[in-house]
View 1 (cartoon, rainbow, N blue to C red):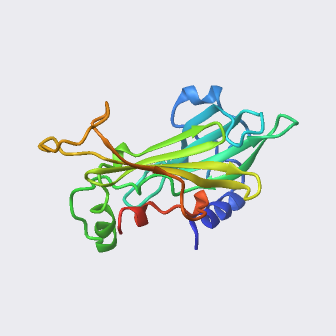
View 2 (view 1 turned 135 degrees about the horizontal axis):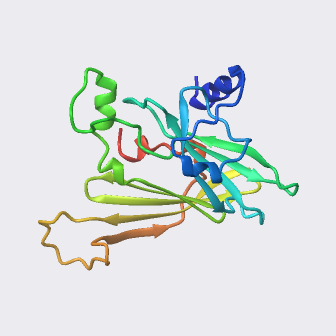
View 3 (view 1 turned 30 degrees about the vertical axis):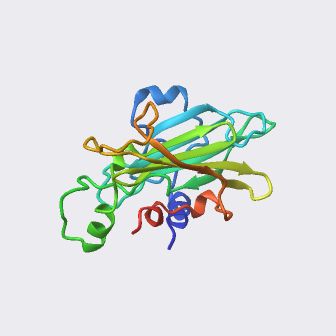
Length: 211
């Protein structure tokens, strides 16, 4: 059963909308259409981006379990605004960040979890950016390689598709190579268009890191 199907069922079974917010300041950005399943809370609200480039400012919620535990995921729900000024839920994504683990280095009793978390490199540095018409993901695929993926909204596909990918080599502090590094201490390996169509809901970070 997919995570998104579980999410849809959870909302359908609720007696009323769960509008739990982690921080009080989020009330100023909140819209009544925003709901999360029981046991979850909204952690952040992005409210200043036109995510599908239609001229209207949209909103995006970042939400997770109140009591988040190993193997859980962080969700992003995208609410787009129509000509009537009302927000509607356009898409919920559960694959933009590494899976959550309280400790990525220590072993646990779950062999599956161990096989996943030991593959992550600097998971807490992974970034999700929402820009005009674009969702950008930055993450390490190994201890010395950073990748950035640009997903651009496609009216035809009704989603965001991969349009650009950049990869850098990030040498360790002991590295003595002569390659020219940028101001962030990285060497550009490539900046290219993808070879195949990839919809953002089909993105799988675990495949990129070799799990």
